[in-house]
Length: 299
Image (cartoon, rainbow, N blue to C red; front, side, top):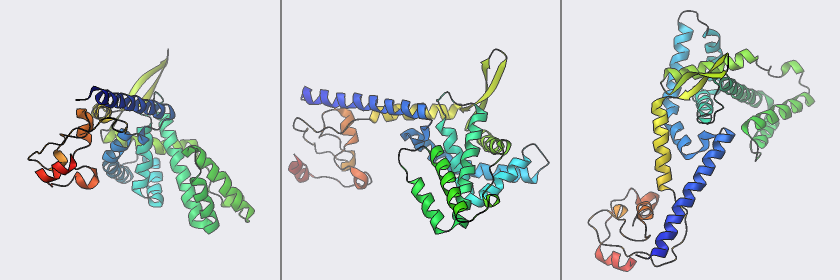
């Protein structure tokens, strides 16, 4: 085996892991964990069960005895009618995942951010429905703006659309009123409680100062364990696509589907596992065998 090529492939792996960890740290600092590879996978796994739990929680609270949650359950129910239960759950779960491992996980703060996000989405939906094509076009243009956070996009859409509508003759009272802070945070807390009820997150007291303790939102142990394993797995399979600088290893004839044949090509075991004889989206589901003649042609 050529040691130069092997060292290059090992270096590719180390640099890929370092690059991924820098990206993960940046995502933590920006509160965007849901945009990482493991964050997206976690979201896909939780989204539908969480949507069902939100629906059940709304139904249970609105049909049961009067409670402190009744007002916010009604508000959330109205939101699901306007935006859809899946989209409400999407916005809430995405924000909860975003603040995992960031240190910026005060429960009330996350609840307020969830409520603020849903308020902005409800406003956009309202103006699209009644503002006409010109308003819809303006909203689409603002949403496409690059290098702008979701929060800044929402603010930009609100200011631009309301300015446009006022110039078209709308009265100030025709614009969608701003939610009260209590409503914004209450809706967020209601949605967080659904995630706690589902067993995906926990509420944990944290000492903030000498005589001050506040609740923070933490992933449940099963979610933390899953994230740790996912991150280790992603790191172990990471590599940069560098070209071979030495001839590839010859492929060996094996009595197994070509997608499981990792005998040739790259020099390191890791890169051979990732790049089997028959790879790609189609190859990974194929049970085709390569005979001696095909192997000979490849080599």
